[in-house]
Image: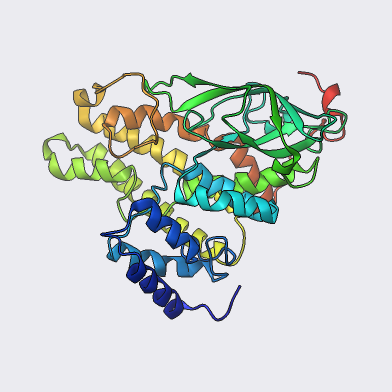
Length: 397
């Protein structure tokens, strides 16, 4: 981290970028590439990789200057998996060649990423995954298996993938981590229609997919360690995103309450007050978590934030449906579409109610996250395990 880069220096570099590439006359992609090259994409990243080796806290200085000038952003909701999960993992474990190949088009949004982790038989117990990667005589890896609940697989060019490379080792030790080209032969993406009517998730079938060893992240057999970086960042990106007061799910309910006094009852009033306070506490806790990130990598605290996010979304959306009465039972559109992003606040109450049910499953189930908080935050004894030293191939399935 460079001590020479301070807020004044970031402002100077931002104004130089705006002068050289005025947002009003520069194409969106061209501006974003120039921003990356100026080190203003994520200032805490290394020089040459979209950053300035500066403190993470200075990112908001650049963001504020750019927003005031009307500069385009990189549509982070559409490329959230790349930004929140793939990028920090590539930065932490990738080779220099991998970092330079993948980080710039990822941040600019030219290449969308997805996450090939969960499987039909390995969801909560992710380390039990069965997708196999076998090295052939050329040094490449041949991958066969099935992944599930894959957001944006229908849009993605690249995927972060974990697969079993040694079934003779215990389940956590025989896994390796790869970057998979979603356009390669043998990759088949099928939509999974959800209770909302949409298919934002997918099944992905991998049949004889060839992955060069140059697309492996981290040493062979240490994929679980690499995956922990991805998972910790995932939970922060889901539960710890920056929102304004009354942002997120609490906003539409508070708006309805103010604009529709005829819907109010003493019970819904009390529940709304309670949930409003809890939402604000969660928002401020997220701010504190982001401040802690300035000093290091995400820790298990992100699991606690993701837990709160899921519970609050479900309780708030339930209150909204109740508050609206008969209107809350209406559902505007159940057409099967494959969206580019999840829009909680831009849809109706019925959508929010149904979609929030998945919040306690995606990104780690609430039950698994409770164990993580208990063991790694509170220091409680770990649950007993009888599979710790047993080879994966000998486990009952």
